[in-house]
Length: 154
Image 1: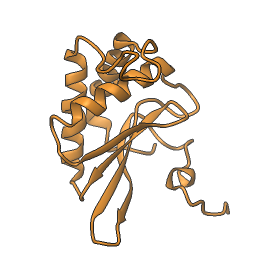
Image 2: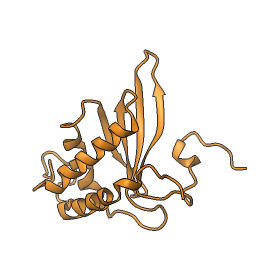
Image 3: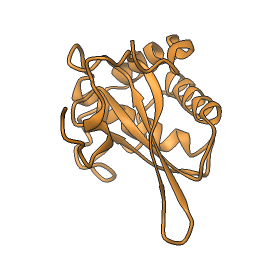
Image 4: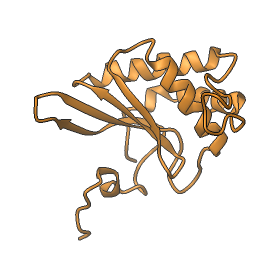
């Protein structure tokens, strides 16, 4: 048996997951009672395919900006180093349905966007490293499989 790791995703057998999906990865209750919920928003199948970094970068900007138009609970949308997905951090304990609706609405916004927000030298550390077309293709692919988001493993 493998030793349990401190990082939740390191305990997930990435060979058995069936991307794309959206799953609750962790929930923490803070000392004063506040709750933070972390969702694994997986775009591609681990160890089989990945998103290119300019696509990851653009999705990060687009989702971070547009998701906040739909939900005040968004804390962060952070890319995974493996380039297969993102962690969506929210305050509170939203239902899976509410999170799926937030993700779907934001992906739709990405499809309708005509630019990547803050993709410039003033607002971004690598302003030239973006692709709206790549982000929109990834968003379209994830949305096309929305009916599969609750199935995490094969």
